[in-house]
Amino acid sequence: QVRLVESGGGLVQAGGSLRLSCAASGRTFSTYTVGWFRQTPGKEREFVASISWSGGHTTYSNSVKGRFTISRDSAKDTVYLQMNNLKPEDAARYYCAASEYEAYDIWGQGTQVTVSS
Image 1 (cartoon, rainbow, N blue to C red):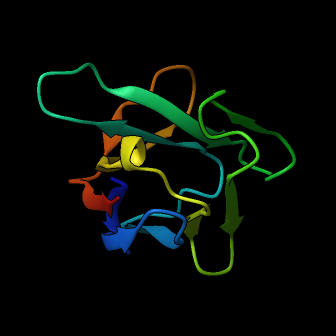
Image 2: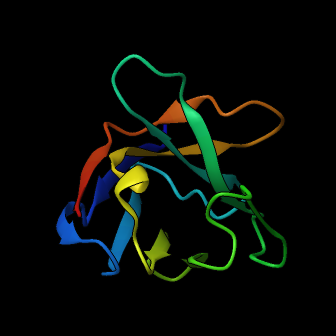
């Protein structure tokens, strides 16, 4: 069973950067698509970005395109989300999730990102 652990969240000023990490344990997730999602209280969980198992295909939400970059290091079994030019509206709890076939069915506990204006 794959387990996911996110890290790298914190407090940053608007315009700053953070890099989130999603590390797999228990079993490799090198054959999984991995996505990042975010959620604020009272709102639906929102898709942010995803990366294919090979790393060759990435997708982004329009709200983060051009500012965020998703990547993966298969040797470390880790997926990253580099977030640049952060805005107050990017503040949320960020989750990574893995999909072996169609649905994202493995989720981490999340890491909190706070952006001060």
